[in-house]
Length: 257
Image 1 (cartoon, rainbow, N blue to C red):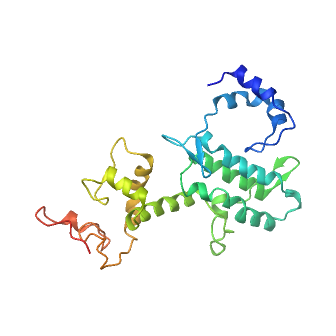
Image 2 (image 1 turned 45 degrees about the vertical axis):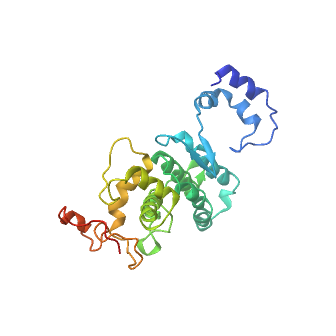
Image 3 (image 1 turned 90 degrees about the horizontal axis):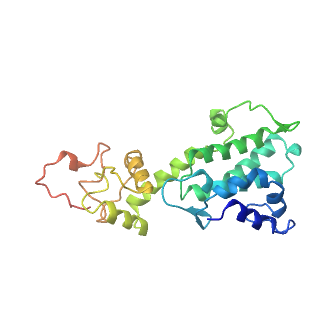
């Protein structure tokens, strides 16, 4: 881990006119703003990134998703905000800004502060600026996220997007044969069915999300019979829970349909 002096030496040895890095900043920015950002650079602990998603162990930290925030800011910086009407800004938010985090949110759930920050940037862009100050936000982002019939303009709420992707994970886990699904079944469900499995300490964050969301999704899953892949006793056929919870121990609970 480099100390502050070593980091400063590297920063000021850079060509100020060098090409911008992945964060959109060149050497001049880091040298000019050194006194402001030096401690942030020293404390920054980036995880590995694969296909645009950070790979980390433990809970997601805010710093892991700084690239997402920078991408949104860089997009807005290149637009002539003052020349755009509210309708034009709404189109850019819906079709450009809101599409940037979708791939990331489908894989990992960022810290709630990250979601609020991204939505705050989008809201500031939509309402605009006047005399270097943010304009008053006449309507909350939650209201803007409603459909036109409900009084909104069809923006998306990133928290709802995260929930939707988490629900889809449980649906894929239950209805599809996947490598990651087989891994979780082998690790957590060797002695019990996923429906009856309860949360325990020491489990991964992804599995905890699956356990938390399963009751919200399970009642809405429909099964196609005659494939032999579904359990008569453990799958929720009538919306009241699996039949196994009402049965005696003497019944064969391995029957499939």
